[in-house]
Length: 163
Image (cartoon, rainbow, N blue to C red; front, side, top):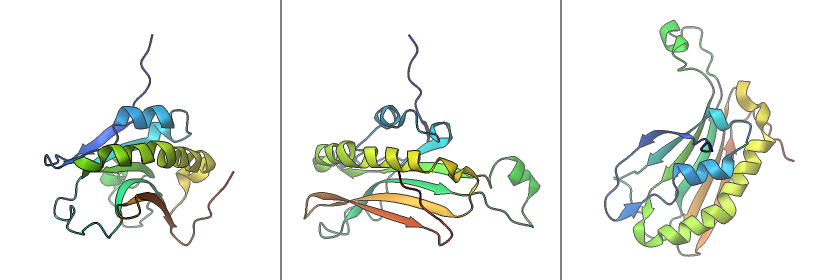
């Protein structure tokens, strides 16, 4: 019996004891298995220690993001960096550290809402691999309202597909 593929982890920042990551690569990979971009996805587990909880509870903060940045085409670009893939299209997932006391609340919301939305978003945009520009789906947690909000942004050239 073979193991299911797991999205590669590109970066994992160490977090203090007060914070933790709400999701792991295995759970994310299981839910996103089969999306057209699966092999191109990479996960960054990130903690902005200089900003962590300094915002207070009144400001929603990022807990999960998926992004696409199209291939960069520069006339004076280094061929060495181009050969190394530096300018190629990139699909990334950012998992932000959350307060340990809110981990299970945020995790439940991400599993119920965010990951299915990300799966649908990736499935609806399989044609993106060669597009210039960027497209981002960001999930913010609002502690006061106890809700997860979704924010979608893209460069002006982007045309979003919906199924």
